[in-house]
Length: 219
Image 1 (spheres, rainbow, N blue to C red):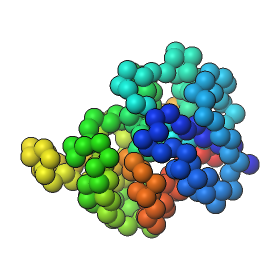
Image 2: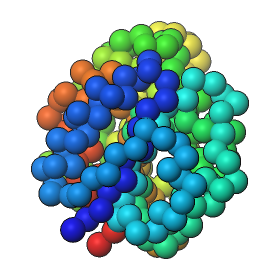
Image 3: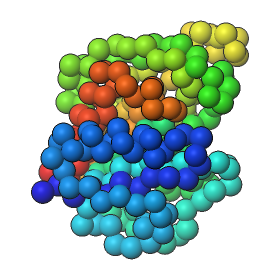
Image 4: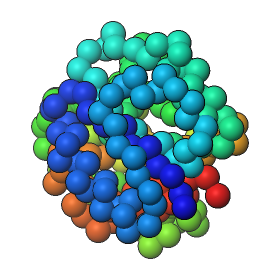
């Protein structure tokens, strides 16, 4: 049995408890055993027995951090083979934890349209040969369009193009939406969609996330 720790909660603006219902469905379809926690101090214990950690934690302040103990336990688990799957607010969480963002492969910088603004944009799959993107089509989203700072070692799977309607100098610039990477023996999957539950309702983002979870879990 694949053992999953799902850590979620924090800032209510991302509606983590509603999105948890969607996440439970995906994990259930995969037949994985899920343990849920709303307590950040869950990261203060040995996590190496989990095959996957799903990070749905949300922060409200840029000064929020992981303790040294939490960083150590999380990264030790991933380095030893525990996978990580995360989306949207996970890249804006624990902003002061550099090691966390180094492991995740990226950091949220801005949503030029503003907090919660339903800006319409396209997600374009750039690597259709990867197991995470098999059968995933390009799709449209009307939500926060994340502008990301990302690790050049990421394997980018999908991206978006900014139209310059909010910051004219970003017109035509591309930013990663989904990527995978290796951290030690662990696999990491992230995508930037999911400010609200309706953003995750489409068949393509659902497939992308489900396959990302399956890919990241320890074999």
